[in-house]
Length: 432
Ligand SMILES: C[S@@+](CC[C@H](N)C(=O)[O-])C[C@H]1O[C@@H](n2cnc3c(N)ncnc32)[C@H](O)[C@@H]1O
Image 1: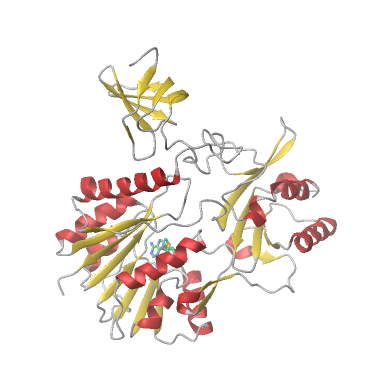
Image 2: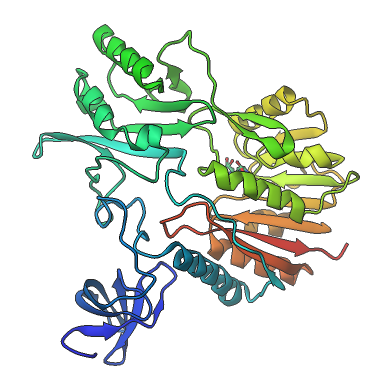
């Protein structure tokens, strides 16, 4: 300790807190950056470490920047706006490499250059909470607060696509003008290349008058509105005569991929284009290659791979997404793909889709792919693993290396700037 509750921060923890050492204990400080001297207050003391938050920066790091969002510090949507983009990237790369080393006991031979995109307005998918708060007499729309379970009172969001991020006030006014605004718990946002859509979840039916107000708003703002009365199957276009036109293009592969507003799509389309291109390049696809794309979703990697390979099999747990992938293959006149629905976390003894393959792409959810890897013993020349969780990637990388694969390269993909989420890609070479 330098002074009364003033400490020097030496490094960053994986989740982005500053690390200091005080009286023989490690202290994790929210809002502190390496090299800084800060005044802090304790949040919680534990036996082996303590937690606190920075209340004043006495000596600032050159990597400290002013957060651009008026809701920074309250909204839990993105927590790293006070770090320079360069530090965010460097930190994410450190998190990836340290996870690989400590959890997987592996090190990539090469570190891939980070894939970078726009720092703001990148987010094309989001679920926004909606709640009328009696005490404030206000309808809140937004993400959850950083602390606790309440919704942050957002006037705008600069991470979201501006067609929605700059429309919070008019959305709030629209919802408040409806008879049943207390019965709207959430809005889902889905933005395609030429269409902005929202799905309004409602627990009570709308009156004719309310439906007309929604239609007027939709026309005026050029936002397509879907209504959701119950589960995902109940989603309907507000104007049933309207055409569905959510799609994104992957021009490098001459592809146009259609999706529905609740489908999984990568949230950052600029980064997604780079990611798909990199994955295909890293697999070093040749015209005789037979590829399996696990967790294929609507064909985001499958169809680009199919443009170059002999054949591609896409496997995925959601029947809806497989239907979308088949539709997308047909629409794009791709005829060398086959798609199968399978729960890849609990494989049966025999699977109908197991063909001769020599290359593999894996893009699992946060839990990773350990069940698939241990039950299937993949024999591939090259395997590219796209991950949204460096801890499960590291665990699975350790397993793959124990099975004879080598970790050729790995790197980060800045899919979620300003947040602590780390997307990454890793390349494994098999013994084939
Ligand atoms: C990270 S997304 C990747 C989707 C696709 N590769 C893309 O880029 O759009 C993970 C996918 O895994 C699927 N999934 C989740 N759990 C699964 C399971 N148990 N078995 C098979 N697929 C699953 C999800 O439906 C989702 O499409």
